[in-house]
Length: 342
Ligand SMILES: *[C@@H]1O[C@H](CO)[C@@H](O)[C@H](O)[C@H]1NC(C)=O
Ligand SMILES: *[C@@H]1O[C@H](CO)[C@@H](O)[C@H](O)[C@H]1NC(C)=O
Ligand SMILES: *[C@@H]1O[C@H](CO)[C@@H](O)[C@H](O)[C@H]1NC(C)=O
Ligand SMILES: *[C@@H]1O[C@H](CO)[C@@H](O)[C@H](O)[C@H]1NC(C)=O
Ligand SMILES: *[C@@H]1O[C@H](CO)[C@@H](O)[C@H](O)[C@H]1NC(C)=O
Ligand SMILES: *[C@@H]1O[C@H](CO)[C@@H](O)[C@H](O)[C@H]1NC(C)=O
Ligand SMILES: *[C@@H]1O[C@H](CO)[C@@H](O)[C@H](O)[C@H]1NC(C)=O
Image 1 (cartoon, rainbow, N blue to C red):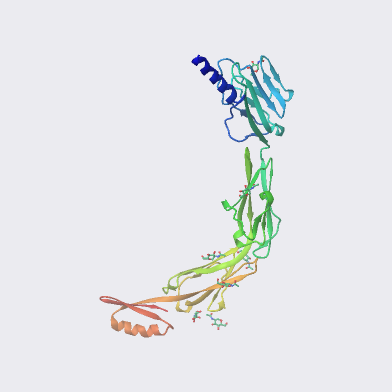
Image 2: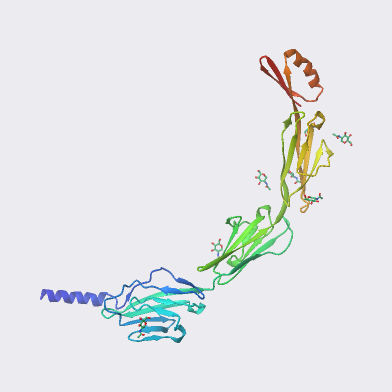
């Protein structure tokens, strides 16, 4: 009697507390993605039963696409596009079209036990085959011009992402993104906006990236001369003028306020003479922004006198003929050296 009641309790639990239908599957969380023309498999987590299922049936948007019992009934629109693994209920769908997007439901009636159900959502996308960035043709000058960059692509575009010079685009007061990230608004353009922009257009099954080089004319900024502050007479001296400028700056050099004919970025003195000691001015000029700026290098000469103390005395007289000589003595017996920077 005890055993009988125990079985009754078990049956009672089975029927009252277990849901009448059992949901199982499906391997991936969230929706599956497919490409138009491609294929997708709705794999169940079921293992083949000892006795084949009585019925395996798939429905999509309220329409039965296949019911497999002792015979197979396939919806005409799906013939030649589906394969059913009757042992597990797994369905493969081929030659996908956009209209295949939606929820698929599976109902299985096993030979024994409860009916089982499963569902999965499929999203079908048109693969992205091209992406382009366009921008109005114009000469852009820092602080004066404004522009836009527009990203377009073909296919089902789900996301658009912008990258500048390899980093995620940084939004500022003057650089904003429009709806859907389609357009970058730059108002006004700044020197920091100069560079290469990329737009990555994507959906879960494909992506394309377009590149665009944006030229912002600016500068010249940070004009400086790379060269020695003092050099030995008779030696070659090379001075190079650099400027941060788009387009590259045009240079001109003047010496002690007098123009030279040098228009290159480097100024070369083949042999330093006392008369070539003085102030070298490099002027950088941007032919698009029409701005210019300059910097000065005060080039000094160095001299060394080697001899005994009394000779140095004589030489000092000679040195004194040059203006503003800052001299210092270096005594390494038996030599006394005098270095003069003037
Ligand atoms: C029904 O389809 C399944 C899977 O394609 C196949 O194994 C089975 O033989 C088919 N049954 C009939 C009666 O055609
Ligand atoms: C827009 O860009 C941001 C930043 O890159 C990104 O997080 C977001 O997903 C994008 N939105 C769309 C609709 O592409
Ligand atoms: C000028 O140089 C400074 C220091 O190197 C730097 O911080 C600044 O960004 C430069 N300016 C431009 C416009 O390049
Ligand atoms: C500026 O420099 C460019 C390139 O070096 C040169 O073609 C152009 O003639 C120069 N313009 C002037 C006004 O010197
Ligand atoms: C600079 O020009 C002035 C006037 O033309 C001239 O007297 C002077 O000698 C020049 N200086 C140099 C260093 O060429
Ligand atoms: C060079 O410039 C400095 C400061 O600007 C000035 O003191 C000096 O006299 C100048 N040298 C010559 C040779 O003009
Ligand atoms: C030239 O450069 C100096 C130093 O960077 C700056 O103070 C000055 O404003 C600049 N002048 C022009 C006309 O850009």
